[in-house]
Each structure stands twice: as structure tokens, then as C-alpha cells.
Image (cartoon, rainbow, N blue to C red; front, side):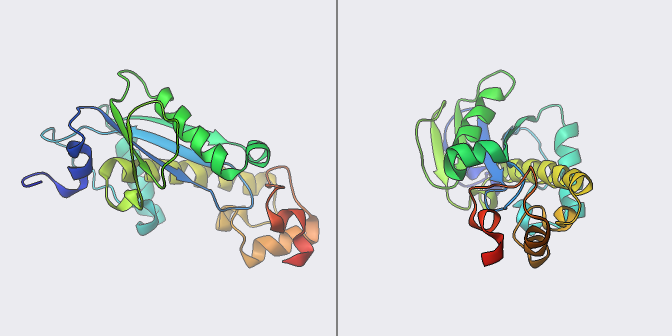
Length: 207
């Protein structure tokens, strides 16, 4: 689309004024919640100069800086939703993530989004018209902003969990199955924020 800033081409291709970008962080870890953010950004021709990008391509310091800029812009609307390890164990990680994505869009302050761009593969139902975008955090500014907010939120939470449940290295691994984390599981067993339905937690001596 000629003349349209590339990060917003997907948003503007939908032909509506209010688009929510949705992304998750934390599907793969052995501990901690999965976190979903839904974000509505001002669209061109409104000026918006926060240089969002896929959170995985940013340094921690840059993510924190962009998270602050997004939260300080009064035109940016966002909602962040968690699904706990217990909910993940009960529902499974896929259903828990999809459920959180639906809730995050519904939790946005009015006006209700007219459409959503969601990172990942399609699922249904969804509360607004939706376009699913594989690797969308690298293709859509709205999804990229959601990935940043969700990542910074979850990282801070796992830093707190490291103080509450020492010995697993949560501040460093954020709950992912690193060698340090697996050693902590073998030595101490799981703690209350572990996902008991995940194999390395249920049978740590096998990993």
C-alpha cells in the first residue's frame, strides 16, 4: 500500500479505524503464567513515533524503554491478561492462551475494537472480526506493541517469583527449561508456579 508506513499496512488493509493487536508470551516455559496483551495504537495519518518491533529482537533495556513509552502515550489502549499454571494444567496451554486472547480484547477500554490482528494460527470463536498472522510480531506494529507489553510484564513477574521461589533461576530463565532450571527441579522438585502437566515437571529425573 503505497504511502503507508510499513508497520501499519496490515492494520490499514482492514479498512476500519480501531484495530487491536494481540500477542502472547510464555507458552513454552515450565513455570509461570502465559501472558497475553491486546493493544490499540493510533493509526496513520495520526503521528505515532514509538519504534515498536518484535520483542524477541530487542534487548531487555530497549523493551523496557518501549514499554514505558507505550504506557505513557494516552492514545494507546491496552489490556494484559494472565492464565495461571493451574489454569494451564486444567485447560492445556493452547486453550488457555486462546481464552486469554479473547479476554484481553474484551478487556480493552471502550470503544470496542472493530477488528483484531492476532499473532499465530487461526482459532475460533473470537469476539471481533479477526485476522491471524503467523510471525505477526514482525509484520504488524500493533502486534509488536502487544509482544513488548506482554514480555516486559511477564519478565517482571518472573523476577518476583525468583525471590519467592529461589533455586530455579527464574530471574534468568523466566521459567524456561534451561539446565539450571532442570537441575533445580531434580534437586527440589516443583514449586507452586510450575506447570505440572508439562513432562519435565511431572518427571524431572527423566530430563
